[in-house]
Image: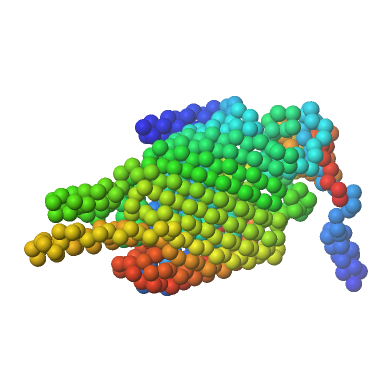
Amino acid sequence: MKLLIISLIAWLLAHSPVRADDALYVVVNATNGIERLSHHEVVDIFMGRDSTFPDGKDVTVFDNSSDIDTRALFYRQLVNRSLAQVSSYWARLQFSARVTQPRKIDQSSTLLELMNRTPSGITFVRSADLDPALKVVYKFDP
Amino acid sequence: MHKFVTAGLIGLMFAGWAHAETGVRFSGFGSLGAIYNDSDNLGFHRDYTMDAVGQGWSTAGDTLLGLQLNAEMSGSFDAVAQMVFKDRVSNRVSDNLEWLFLRYRPNNNWAFRAGRLGLDLYMLTEYRDVGYAYSWVRPIPEFYNLISSISRYEGADVTYRRDIGELNFEAKAAFGETDMDLQGPEQGGLFALDNIMALTLSLSGNDWLVRAAAAQADTSGTNADTDMLLDALRAVPTAVWPQAGLLAQDIAFDDKLSRYYALGFQYDDGQWIVKSELGYTESEWRLLQPYASGYLSIGRRFDDLTLYGVFARVENTKEAPRIELPESLPYLPEPEKAALLALHQAAQYSYEVSTLAQSTYSLGLRWDFYEDMALKLQWDHSEIDPKGSSLWVRSHPMGHDDRVNLFSVNLSFTF
């Protein structure tokens, strides 16, 4: 019985809803001159409409795929679309050769490393994955 | 000429790979499809470059595989190669090469491309084979069959885009040429477009897109039956049938100017998907009467399911002209009379062989059941007016008033 209760508590903890402060952040390389992006600018960059930052410098998007829930929440908050819809959207752009789909990065550690050595990099992370090497340029309302 | 362009581009792409190995991306798309066609007379094809599928189940009509290489090169250059393997009429290996181009993008606003390119004329022309990118099993045949047959070309285009407030404006101008092996309603042939000029304008917001396009090209073609008819018409003595020479000029498919116009609208707010396009095509070639086509598609998403219904219609805006009987006919001896009548009939038939008149009602379901994969079911019911069946491949001469049902099951994916 005790084991069952402990298991139940553990399960509840593991599956508890996202904490209110566990918001989503759009981050760039710390050396980037950009301080802040508008929601519209973030949409244009992540949906392939702009290949540069507002200051005209090249942008390299890394699609954080380390956690499917984070990714689903990001695109829901960004453009109010499901992952399947985003995927279908990119199939259109990718295979009509207009824009190349951003690289999906499956590991948080790889993502951080890539963001570190890519001055033009941009991605999105949970607050737990914020790092001094990353500069926050946009925060979604939780 | 375009062979050199192609060879040059291949060279450039290899140069690009050598210098920027990390900038090369491989990706692909495909569909595994089965079609049930209930007509014993009309074979179905998505476009005229593909062999038609007859009565019963077939997997050839919708099954295809696309492979793509993107090479980011130094500076603002990149190159794209795409191969699409499907049941083509042509056996030339090089015809599987859908695109191969070099692109220069000096900034966010301008893009210049050269090589083998997609003609961005209708809303789906550049991704018509990427089933995963749209709800339907295939682009609407009434609208896309003809244009999909000629929607890639060798040439160059330039794109200008800019933001207008929160909207996105884009203009594209294209110039080039192409040729294709086609399977027409009753016979195959080679089809060529020269001096293609196309202009596309589009304006889009987050949830909607409107676009307008116009194109023109000098169109030429050959096929065995038409060549025989032309030889016969040209051999008729002027005294017997003075108009025969003029008829031959109209029927000869040689550098005849054709024009294409299209309007498109799309709305997608995440729940509702509405798509509609209208098109008009005209040609100086007497065998293709001007025609208008259009469709309206309404879809509704329920989580991973999308339900949709489509109405589509294509019809000629002018009837095929009547060819007058030779005035000499009553005065000719019996064998010559019969021969001339047969020739007159053949010429008249050739005027009507490309007649288009049909409506299709479609119902379908798309299920996004797994990442980068969608399963689709679709039912198409086509009502074809008398003589209006030239989107299909006929096993009997035209003249039927046909109704055809297609049932399709399709798995579309990307990787």
